[in-house]
Image 1 (cartoon, helix red, strand yellow):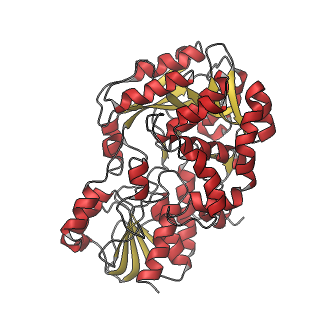
Image 2 (image 1 turned 180 degrees about the horizontal axis):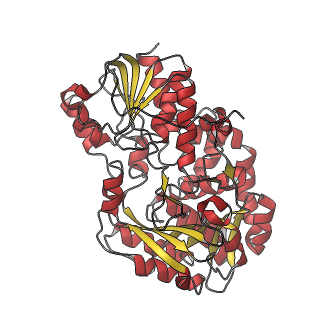
Length: 487
């Protein structure tokens, strides 16, 4: 691999004319820009903050030498994203590290459900429920090459309808129903509940099973990797790829109106629907603005980053080999936690998502020390400090955890929105992913990335296929721009 040049971006927007300008340098904004630059179009990315990356930034939040992922930490779809995979980002400095266990889910009896890349190993660990697990997932894995393009597609007509039909028959259901009807044991049910809780929806809602199925599929297809050196390395690799194809990036340049942008045939926005209406103003019809402003955001998150004196002392061995640990006990407890958040209350025993990147990436902390990363869901805009509740949950399954805490940094929903305006009320997923907003994400249009103004496009996680570090929203939006105005 050739030596990587240091990333240097301009602080002043160019006055030249571009084929396309992309507002926002998150993974979707960078993905859109790369797609357009590869097609031979001149592209400028404009970022409001001093550094690029959006949800893929890494910094020292606690003590010197402890590198913490500010937002996204473990990348279930990163390695298997068709677009990111095609970019050969290893040549631009990105190295994936895959923990032995994708996700573990501890239980009060000292056991833990273990979801590994190997289907056989996962089945063996589930005991009597293993056969039912294989029955559900083996056919989906056999069709993965047909399923993935549609699951990460535009949510319109599937390219492989029969494969999607088999998936959809199960995925349309609620996670509670699928888990209780498919498995009898506590471990399998709890593991599925933890996966489905990534939907940030009550687990009795339709489509929550689909989220659980997709995440378990990604665990078997590529594991759940972390980026060596932190999630910032994903954005930096994408930036190098863009610059290598002639693109440009400007930082420290917040955009509040179209007049602040250089002249361009197309403008793609890695922002929320509401931000788009504020920036575009009269360039969009009032009726369309009302539709975008009606887009709904879900619960927020309360996050803690820890500098630790050692690894988290989980009782269950599987948790000590996992990049991600879902802390929440049995299915009923996880479901109660997620339901409470939607009812506007704060669960006493929240479902907590924990990542422990330093177990597998020694660059994250000083020798002998470790980092911890964890969050729970809270009502949108919550001002309640969940530190005690989160740490009690971890201590429950890892006695002695608190004795290892050297320093902590907390981020409230307001803190997330201040950090990134896309995280409305602390919602880090780009908006509610229920039945209504699956069909109209962000509005009811055949191409969800387009607007009535032929120059303006939306490419954020508020478009299909939604949240996650995969770049597919940006890729699809760039293709829409190439068809519509950049032919």
